Image 1 (cartoon, protein in one colour):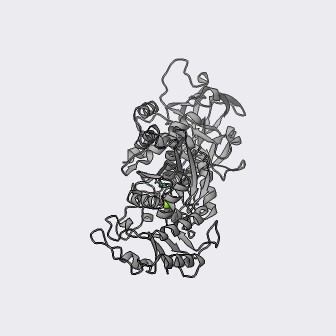
Image 2 (image 1 turned 90 degrees about the vertical axis):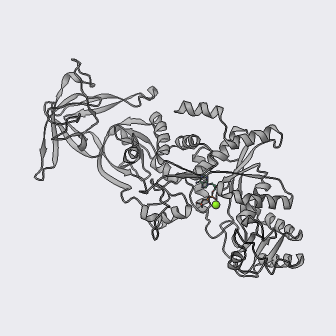
Length: 559
Ligand code: ATP
Ligand code: MG
């Protein structure tokens, strides 16, 4: 699969690569400069990772640079906590920015340019309330109505705008609007608002400003200040492009251009920051970094690697039309990566004792085990074996169907890296629950081979009951039960689509002692059980693992 990707990549360029190559070869630009412009009003999610991979990836591919620009033009929702997390997440994903900027650093320049537009007769102060402005915009079928304040003189506009800045007016009392065309077929061109009054402290500029530029005005002008050549954003902004161009052309500043690609949507999750914030605030998850969240920090805590996320973004490509990507593609990228990277260990999540009746008491052996069959350089380790082991409860059945190749009375099974054992029966408590399974071992099968060549169909994992560690394991399922949680019946919200069983905490799991050295974020394959990562809350005294992903896609079957 990987090979295919590489070959198709070489043959087929995405549309952004084509645009950039044309711009470079025609001499239209001499170097590519992109930017990643998050609003610091939440944590980054997998959709942002897509945008990061595109912006940083394109610049890297063509020897250009990428700026990180915080689009911090709305003081109400923004915070330095988010700024810090965004920087951490981008670095973790493996990218570095050329320059770090804040739209708020451009407030003075943006203000001066707004005055310039006023002087050119291209902007005016409007006294209508935001509500009136909305009502007077018209509809797609009908033109809007000119504001009664549209023809104010340049002097009056300059004075009023200055007074807006000085704080002479209350929130919503006045706005600055671009003077374009109230009958324009594109609603965004009907005298869009450039500035609104918000008397709220800003996380960086404090109380210096009480007028704040709107996205459409601030974004293109910030791109232009930084000489961004390709301002790449998601599709919903395509109808904003004429306005983006209008501001730049009216001001005669560096001609940055905007290009749109399809935003990433993934099944069984939500990606709006507002909704993710609601999940956090209302306690549906433990925080932004809850391992079930689609946030970068959530994926990291869950055990995702930066490589797997980059591979996924590469694999899904850059589309021009909106689409919905199956969550399993993200998981498959992760499996491919962890298969190469993760050491194999044995861990029993739902333990029951297995007693080998003919094995000597008070004896133990150190058996050889391969750390990673995909990577010989990872070497071997010793694992302890003795008379009493733990195995998965599921690996024993008293009355088993024909095709059950694990432990059932009379049946032979290979204990991974150890011996072949034959099940002899079990012990039960008064309620009929199995409390121990019994077997005998064949001492000639050390290492798992049968000298007489007899076939052993099943191999199970185990840990030495006398020499193992306790652990807690968090097992996760999809956070939402439906593919498109945002789509709900009347009267319901996305919260009604939450999966009530998305987290199962398994206490009393038994893991091999080599894991005593495991550090937070270390990743392992628990043989037969999946990939697991050491949780942030884990300590040497109390190991906690997160199940990152199962070995196979268990959802494919359910569909
Ligand atoms: P939200 O609507 O959830 O608040 P946003 O798009 O406003 O998200 P920003 O912080 O403004 O979030 O996004 C920064 C950059 O990441 C933008 O260029 C945006 O287009 C891009 N981005 C956000 N979500 C996605 C997504 N799902 N897929 C691809 N790119 C995305
Ligand atoms: Mg935004």
